[in-house]
Length: 380
Image: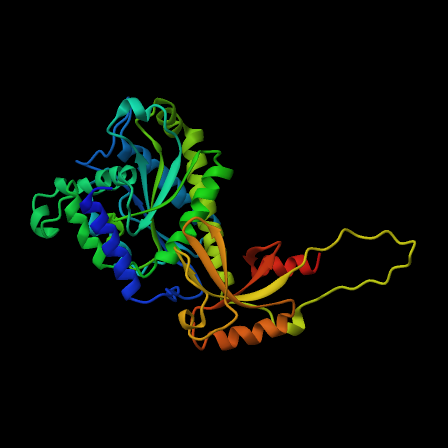
């Protein structure tokens, strides 16, 4: 890492340290009612190019498919597009569209590429970016490429206060800001990558952080997804096929569905007297049923993209905090682990006095699962 990048990255970490140790999730309500889908590039900005196609056309098609899937499955969710035709939209205006609509989620859809086309022929897969610091030169190639769209704006030097996406020193400005919705963005990004891997059978290139302009000022959980490499002939062919577009759109839709269910599950839980625990009387001759999985209840109070010491001083004097890593860049912090549902309810009430967005989850086999899934296991 050269000196400029080292300064940029260390400045970002210093900023996070100075603004506090714990970053609780912002409260956006109990439902996901508005989603903004942002097909990257468009109009005079073609994006990356392959042998036979342009990024702007592929991502528009995929985006419209995602919107259609959401509309059909969730008619109560308003789907807003930054563009539905081949037009150019400035990066900051895309975020403004989402902010003005008071959206609950922002998804910017792109294809990937590389300057070295010879090397690009050997790379595959999807990756998802969230707003944040980035210290690897390889990832910064994608970041700089996506940010370079501002050159299509005649007044870009004035509008972006001298920011030059091709100069490393320009990115120091991002070390002075923090995305309040980083933890939710990571949650959604992790779900997105899991769907690409499991549903679309794509290579999982992981969740990454980068100073991306289109995500800079969005006031909601936001991600930029690179669905594949258009400079790779095999991936370009896949992304231009009807089956490929359907698979990629379906993966994004499935991630949206899982994230929506998780968000809405956080705000509701059954009274203890409505939890049914079935017991049976068996004789020695009766066949034994399979051993039930142990379900424990707990309260999630925080999520972070990096590990935090579980000291009381870091969590408003809560002393039984546990840290569970659920994915790269995703650490969840829980309190009050118990097999008693009523006790967990009491813990939730107390935790919300310090952590307004605390919610109940379950732990099964050492993994955190939504409360609704844990309750189902109790009655199986």
